[in-house]
Amino acid sequence: MFSRIPKNIKVYKTRHGLQVCGDSREVLKYLEEDSVDLIITSPPFALLRQKSYGNENQEQYVDWLADFGIAAYRVLKETGSFVLDLGGAYKRGKPVRSLHIFRVLLKFCDELGYKLAEEFYWHNPAKLPSPIEWVNKRKIRAKDSVNTVWWFSKSDFPKSDVTKVLVPYSERMKTLLKDPEKFYKPKERPSGHDIGKNFGKNNNAGAIPSNLLTIPNTNSNCHYLRTCKMLKRKSHPARFPKLLPTFFIKYLTDHGDFVVDIFSGSNTTGMVCEQLGRKWLSIESSLDYASLSAIRFMQECSLEKIKNAVEEMESGHFIQLNKLSLQAPILSS
Image (tube, rainbow, N blue to C red; front, side, top):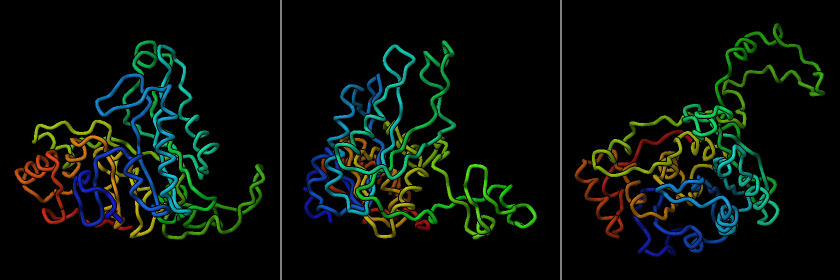
C-alpha cells in the first residue's frame, strides 16, 4: 500500500498507518486508483488573516481546493467518500458572509464529478465569539459556531452504516419506549408522513443521529498538548476534536479499511484510525507539525525518548514508532 511512496517524505510509521510530509496533490499520485475507502480532512480555511499553519485567501480558495479534489477523486473507491470540514468567513470589512463554502460544493459536484451524499453541520458550542468587529464590538451579528461538513461520494451509494453511530435515546423517547401503546398512536401526520408501529420499537442500541453534530472543541490537556508544552514546542493551532473524525470513520468504513487525511495537522485522524483498526495515511506539508504529531502515538514513552524521536524526524530521519512505543488502546469499531 505504501511501497510506492518515496522514503524521503516518510516521517513515521505505526502498526496501521504512515505519516508523510508533502503536498497531498503529489503524494496521492503514489496511491493506486480506486484504493481509498475514505478521505476525511479539515483544510486550512479561507480566512482574511494569514495563520501560522498557512491558509489561502478567499478569492483563490475554491480553485486551490479543487486541485486536491481532483487528486482525491482518482484514488477513491466507487464506494468511497470524501468528508470535507469547512469553516465560514465574512468578506473583508463587511458584515456579509463569503460564499466560498457553497462555491466549493458546486465546483466539486458540477465540475469534478462528486455527488453530495449529505451535508452535516458541526456545532462547537465552545467556539469563541467571532468576528470581533461584528459580534463583540458592534453587536450586529450572532456568534459563528457552526462548520459546514460536506459528505461527498463518488457514486450514488457509498459505503455507510448509520447503525454504527447511533446516539443515546432522549429522555422523552425512553419514556415512550417503556409503554409505546400508551404514549404513541401510529397515524399519518399533517405533514403527510405516515409513521407506523415500528417507530415505537426499542432496538436497544440507540437513536439515529441527526446531521447536526454538537461536539465541543474544549480539549486543552491531552497528552499531545501537555507534551508539546513540556518540550517547549508550538502545537498545531487548528486541531479538530477526536469525536468528529470518529463519527465519520465509524459511519463510512469497516475494520481494516483505508482512510486518508490530506491536511493532517496534528494527526487526530491517524490516531482515531489506529484505535479503530483502520489502515491510514496522513499527509502534512509542514515537517514540524508532522513530526510533532508522532506524540499522539508515544503515550508510554519517556519525555526524553519523545524529544529524541521528534528531533530525528525533523532532521529527515524516518522512525518506526511501533518499535519505539506501545500504541493507544483499541476502541470498539
